[in-house]
Length: 269
Image 1 (cartoon, rainbow, N blue to C red):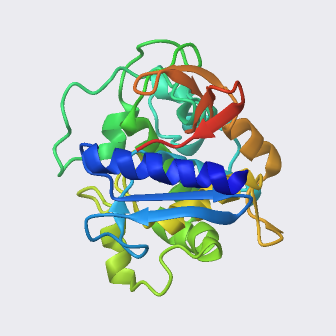
Image 2: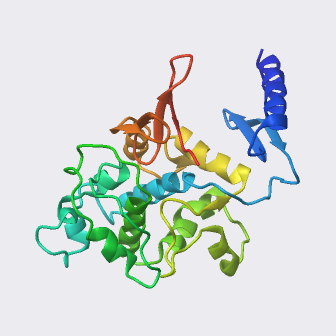
Image 3: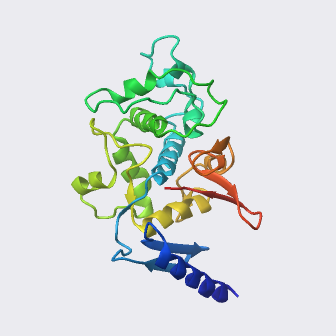
């Protein structure tokens, strides 16, 4: 039965790949840790690094979970805790890490892209109130840039190095990749910090490993990487969600229901 379903799915995928715009580059389907389908087109292979865009946010969520497991932060930490220099009355003082993870921080969106020579984090922290923290979902790349900065402050090292050590190495991501080249696989801002909302590059098998980690509730090869309760919360509805996927939202993961009425979660980029 499974083989018949796989054959039908392969046919559907091949048909879609022939007409999709933009062109489909790769599809990898796993079931119970077994690769059922793996297809590549237009010269791409299993070792091709592709931009995953906003899937980057879900990887940042995993890094928050690791820092939580390491006792470096809590989800109820306010930005005032991590930025004690914040002026009284600023909206940022009452925003918690939990709000950044669920896109409910309530900041007024930036009207213009900041000049690359300016202190990007200070600009983000100075944003005014659009709505109280936790009240409303608003999709924001910049809020995840704040999470990247908080992780760096919490763990005492560049977030990229922390990602490589605590997440990528166990999952076999970026194996044997020279450090100078790794920086090309996660885009940085003018200050040299990785972007939180986008910019990561992964291969299809590496991305599959990341998804499998969450399907195994944070365990990998018999060892716990992420707290089980954090994975459960991340893949459960924490906010109403909305644009761009029009479904509910967890901790930087989208939460949905399949056509067969089964609970599902996904990263989207």
